[in-house]
Structures are given as structure tokens and as C-alpha cells.
Amino acid sequence: MQKLELSAVQDALQNFIDQTVYLHLETTNGAYANHFNEKVMTVNAFIRNTKVNISRATVTGKSPYRVGLKLDEGWVVAEGLTDFEIDDENRLLLAGHNEEGKLAIALQLSHTPF
Image (cartoon, helix red, strand yellow):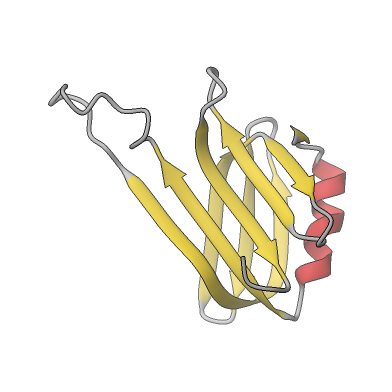
């Protein structure tokens, strides 16, 4: 992955507009949380291979970035994104890594299931 470039990601997002595409979204601190410290709450969200139709997509901010996807029935927003990659299958892979390099959030779009 490379550091998120606003214009490159905005261009890549346009390849998913007005099409049914597959969404992967996950947030986590669970793998990195101290499970023996009752003051640390483990939180996590995970959605994979959900079909969505995106009518609008925007990336905003200054690192870390936020991506908003307007869907038929609402919005998906991912905040804290720092890195991106467009792989050999033209999937858009976005991630947010903390200062230790650990994954905190991932948002991925594809024309085929993950």
C-alpha cells in the first residue's frame, strides 16, 4: 500500500459509481486491545461482500482521510484512512493504520466478491 493520494482515490472511486459493487468495511481495535484491562473497551465492525449501488463517492480531509459513499438507501462513511492500493483485479483497497502501523479501518470496493 502507499500513502493515500486524494486525487488518485477520487478517480478510482468513480469506477464504482452507478454500478452494483461489493463492499468490505471493517474497523478494529480488538486484535490490539488489552483484553485484561477492564478500562479498554474492545470495538469492532465487519461487513464483507455486501452488494451496494453507489450513486456518489467522495474522499475528503487531510490525512487521515474520510470517504463517503451515497447508497440507494443511505450512506457508508469510513474515517481515519491513510493508505490505498488498486490491485491487479482493479479493486480499491483503502486502509487506516495507527501510529504503530496497526490496522484500524479498512474500506474496499470490488466488481467481484472478495
